[in-house]
Length: 578
Image 1 (cartoon, helix red, strand yellow):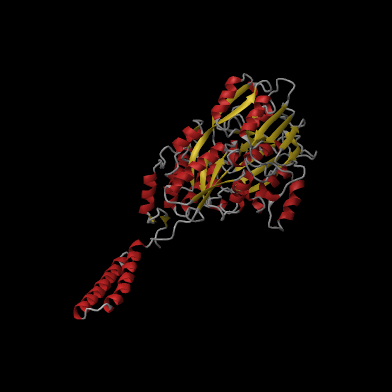
Image 2 (cartoon, helix red, strand yellow):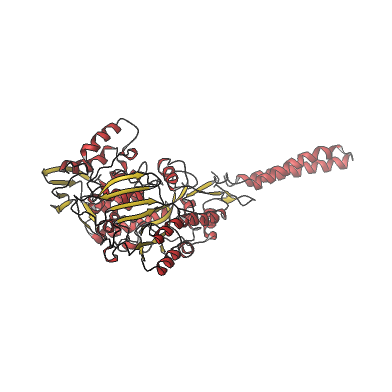
């Protein structure tokens, strides 16, 4: 293929010379205008053909790209980071549009229309059960979760799949860490995500409402956590948590992992057999005890006297149902957390034995502390009805959600607020009377309400953290707490669609993301650069020797050029010639 253009040029040049020679001969033999008149269009055609052969583009222009993000008022950090990266992508000769949209719309497009987007800003939050890297390692990138699970970028790599599952069965911690390092290296090289930062999450609360000594700062999570919601002590007449989010609640559903704000609600309504403690380690919760009989058999004894919010008792049958439901196909997002369970049996009225297919060292964290316990008498008929439809449990919403947790559902006004109340019958009943989550998409408004006392706990602030820092310095009743998050910010690249189906293109784009500048200027220093889905907050598991994509437009262009991309005379990037 490479020799065809020179041969064409040679032929065209020969043709031109031949025509010119004939014309010259004709002029010498008979000095008339006719030969020249005939030769001129032929010469022009030959010259044009030669010019076209030289200047013909190597391929079609790279398709236009749309980069999605949240809107500026709700998430200025995400909006500004995306805007900056889009400008740098344009320097590569790409036609890129930055499309900002409300979070609910963005999430629905990315999650449910998996072939219809190319690039999106996104965030993974630091949920307690993610202190063990197993959830991110398997759930984010294993190919089995690409169709309907958390692998929404459609990454697929057989070596990664093998290693991601292999680490689950390794009981030697050092050997398991080596495999964790290997899976991180694959992701660093294949670039399904462009990692940005682990935020140093700024939270604030009013000390004239909550006793600071009772507010819990959990490792890798910060003070916005289950233990704060259940243990914080009011110091005065105000006994309600009034907190905020900028996200619209998509569902209050124990079988649907629908977002950060949603998960704050579900973890309070529904119990789990275990919880991740403030120290990052799993501890029994709805389970009175968890006993490993051997490498694959785990005996769980249920806490006595538990009841659902409708008054029905919590039974071992409910436990079995809660863990078997994801295997039915109607609860796809939770399937990765149960698919290593070979059998569940009721031993007696208060105990259940889990038998694993093989040893799974993260079982307590990734499964027992992950799945919500749901009432069989409510959800069994629901799942049965859904089995005959195209929908699954994710699309179902109870009129009155029923769990067994420390808070009970009271009301939900979409786009406005969620109200929960203390469950006095719970063995760990909260010290607060109510937990009220207000949807406030504007960060300035949220900060203003904290200052006036309309909010007493700012659990989400996506604005300039130095502004919040100044507010706390000026008001002795406002305390600021910042914690490096287990979660991370990133750009998700849809591996299914052009041009992000080409790893060379993904690597090139990674080089136009100025992480250090984003951390310094947009996060205002309240973050650390990220390079992996395993957080620096759990540094034992984080691979310190990963490929780094330093900011360099020239390096990005070099990668594209080496991969066969070219540019037209307008500077537009062209696909490699096929």
